[in-house]
Amino acid sequence: MFEYLIFFTFAAIAVIFAIVVIIHRNTVISALSLVVSFFALAVMYVLLDAPFMAALQVLVYAGAIMVLFLFVIMLLNIQKLPEAPGRPIHQFFAWVGGFWFGFLLLYYISKAAIVADPPEIYASNARDIGLKLFEAYLLPFELVSIMLLAAIVGALVITQRIERSIRPEEGAP
Amino acid sequence: MIPIEWFLYLSAILFTIGVLGVLTRRNGITMFMSIELMINAVNLTFIAYARQLGDLHGLIFVFFVMAIAAAEAAVGLAIFVALFRHRETIDVDQANLMHW
Image (cartoon, rainbow over all chains, first blue to last red):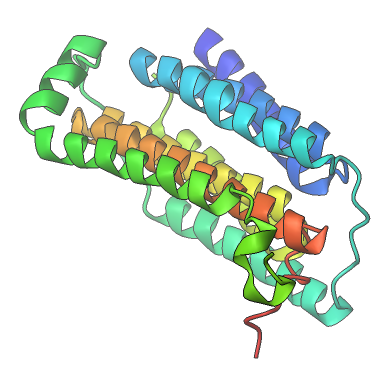
């Protein structure tokens, strides 16, 4: 019973703060709400017997990625940028289509209900995950590290300032 | 143990909120955060099914999804920084140079 209490409390927190993310006009408040939502999801991972994933969720998502978001928001100083409303017909179809999609998602999940009980023993600590990661998944793991390197280099190249004198039409001395 | 359906319902609701955010907002950063929300909803589904099937492969997949989400966030935010430098806006409707 206690499990259910925790589940519904944190599920409500996750959903409410996720709605705040997409509703609120202030980008900083959106980002902080997303952090709260991610923390609530980390609690869900603990309920699913995956404490290592919960730690990763807090460290990588709530820690690193959201700090990156906040950093960019603060750097560009775009907390309150006026947002032109989209065309009404566009907005209408977006809301109707989105809700219809969500309804179908819930409907088909409820139709494909799972009756089997999950296994009692479930070893998902850091050791088991590490053994799988470094034995069966060694090549994808290394590829991901190369991809992260490429992302770092790409981000640096995209954001670097282009010197004025490089452009020919500006008239280099 | 809470039945796995509840986690799937929560994941579906969060995914739908993310879809609505991407479709209805024009602010690039908010759309990006909605995409992160969708990624997390899918991660929750992976972990729920990993628990249901007693299989660690789902957790490994979540690990890779997190790494790719980090890379995507870095490059995407760099694109928005570059866009802001050129256009003084992050409204995705204003980024229409390649629009037909």
